[in-house]
Length: 491
Image 1 (cartoon, rainbow, N blue to C red):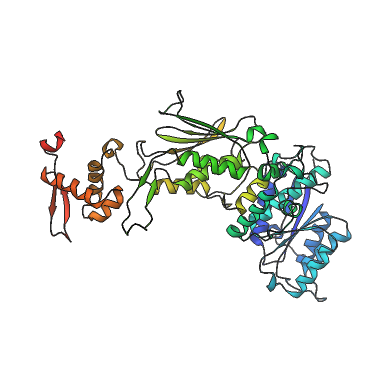
Image 2 (cartoon, rainbow, N blue to C red; image 1 turned 60 degrees about the horizontal axis):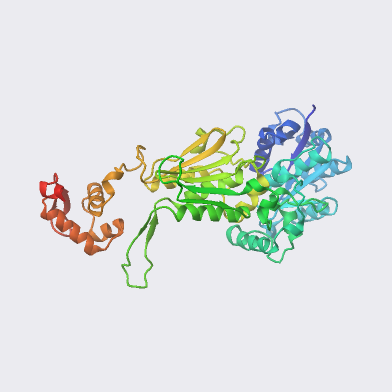
């Protein structure tokens, strides 16, 4: 089949990164790459013809004109018209499909001729606004899928962009949509106001079509009862006593709700069932008591968000969160996007959401990042906690394993501590002194989460047994650990 040609246009010197991203994304996407062939002027080899003639010829040969407009108007010819406007005018005269995206940042600095150009565009085509490169990609994705459906190149749509649930706008919760806008404005400077109507919000997020059909993503994001339409979108959370799947299970919960509620409920399930170090007040009764959970909450939440956001919603399976004695496992039905491997997850990689129309609102509300750093963040946060490096596995399901502090640590980048040696306060204190023999009692108290009086009593006990010796002055000395005496071993 002959591919559909897309001419990607913008002012030279503006949106170079966006043009390159769209070209690469369209070519490599599992669906879009089968139908579309993008053109950007950076890929034109040197030749004897004027650049403007080459670009106008490409507009003639293209099926779709995709314009990205911002604040610059660009070079002007002898008639005071920019090449970008010339390309748009030609596409209009040839009745090409025109997809227009306007960046809504720094509009007060927009060139007067660019303002007039955009007004002309708005009079003849429906345009979309975007704030960042990921928002642009999401909007282009939705537009091109819609184009394929309207032209009947495809008779199906990706799950998040499909309208086959039978749900209507009456099945959505207006309060949830208002809360979303409030949070998105707070977290990411979302451009719409809290007074925005549900229809306008859904249109802005590409979650509703011209016939007022709402997408599957809209139901999962703002539905009153999402599981009424997608029962497998629930999240199953279970805790086990040991390191294998076996009964009895101390806790088993099935959570239902929108994707934001599912993330919060599953995260709370995990964090409420792991150990949590609680310190003591050191600045009076009004001081906040320091706490430190066994697992970094940001890493746990990131793994759960990824599972819910990037899962295969056409599967009858659900996301599973399983807490074992030595680890946390999070499974979601689905596979990694084409070109992304388990190995690549440990380093910088492109953000390739399985469900872009679901991921975009989750980004706006602060639940995810859109630069491909999520799995790296999970790894770094666990290492900073002194935990074993998390693992990613792709089999029938995609699995993330976050190791608890009770797991054996073999990673050279983290401090290796024998979990059997830190069960009591004295032995935990000894582990810390081995690493930092000059540490003060105040800092020891904070590290151990016990009072300074208890630290002093433990140290006095160790000194009386000959196991702990102080060398140097109280203010500049350090602690030396000897072999345990027979008296200490008896204790």
